[in-house]
Image 1 (cartoon, one colour):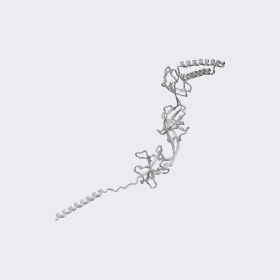
Image 2 (spheres, helix red, strand yellow):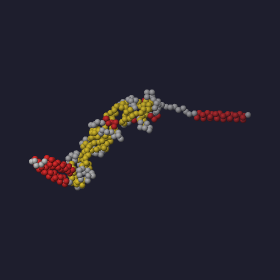
Image 3 (cartoon, helix red, strand yellow):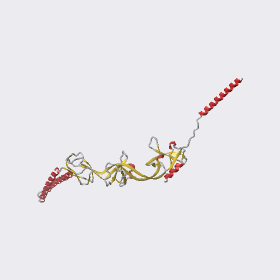
Image 4 (spheres, one colour):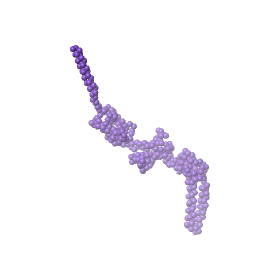
Length: 355
């Protein structure tokens, strides 16, 4: 009897243990409730301010005028008077060509002049018709023009004040008309050609002042003026060309130097935002910001950005003066979500903005 009772007790204990184990497994299998937290964000209040519209363009220094010195016909070069790097003045003799043809032409001109004077006397005495005199006078004028051309192409003068930048022949060489004898460049002043966006076409005026900086001359600033505004737009680049002229009185800027032209277009009164507020849309070039609404939700707002100034952007479209935008915590946000604002960060940034 005792044995049977003991057996029943053991069996009951096993059943109870099994029942407890089953309840434990059921309790473990139940998932815990997920509590969603409201994202905490940093917010700044934006405002309008004057934004300098300063643009920098790259260019290359060019001579204001460039002349190739070439005679009209071939011949032997008898004198080379200047070298590369020499500064020359307008009218200075640079080179001389063989004068044999010139001397012959001058002799023929002298003979024609003597003949013309004789026939004029004969005409005045009534021994020659007017038409005959005119024919001889025409021959004389043709010969004189030929001599003048030969003089110009035998004694080669500099047409400008400038510097010699190329010499391709030596004295004694035959000029073959394949390259100029000299190249003379005017570098007082110099010019720079700048390609500016067509959106700024109405902002540029002839005579506007600009600043120039050359990489080869660090720390030195130059100032020039808009000399020409080309009247057409390049359809490929959507730009127009502006010619900037720099006096360059000390010949410091040299043709070929890489330079930056800084143009001040004035200022615009626009909203300015910190760059950390800008969210780039994946797969496109569009930019967005999260705007905090009065009810504590956020709106995903597209913005059109203007100039970048260090860690700030100018906003051309999309925001208004006084808007509150998110500058931290955007990774957890989506349009319409409720957020909690970190008031300290908001207050700190507003204080800085007001300075």
